[in-house]
Image (cartoon, rainbow, N blue to C red; front, side, top):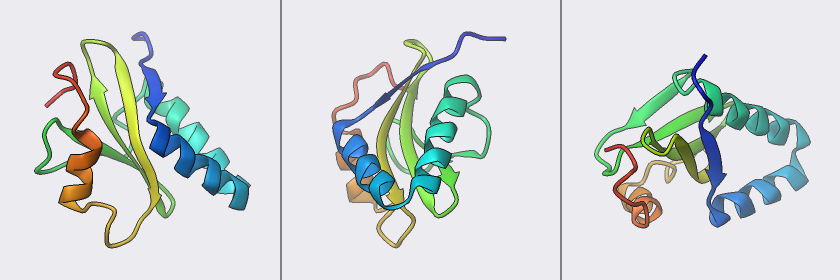
Amino acid sequence: MPEPYEVNVDDRALKEFKKLAKGDQKIATLITNALRLLATDRKTTVKRLSGVKPSLYRKRVENFRIVFAQSAKRREIFVLTIRKRDDDTYDQRELEKFSAGLDSDFDG
């Protein structure tokens, strides 16, 4: 079995998660489990988002989306946002803002 990736969470995503956890412990637990699974198996219900560089991916957890970047070189997953699925979840400008600070080690 390959060595697991390290999962790091952006401060904004952590703030979103803490707010979510206060209101819905069940979904918070499901998201936590999904993040653990991402560390070892990134292919489970993960989809690449089109039109964004570097490449971003999303993991669906019920009505929520975990948007992240990954670096095979650094064996790292960087969670950019955790949000409820709505019309703005995949807004191109928002995704570009999230990914703007990523360095060239992230796939894409």
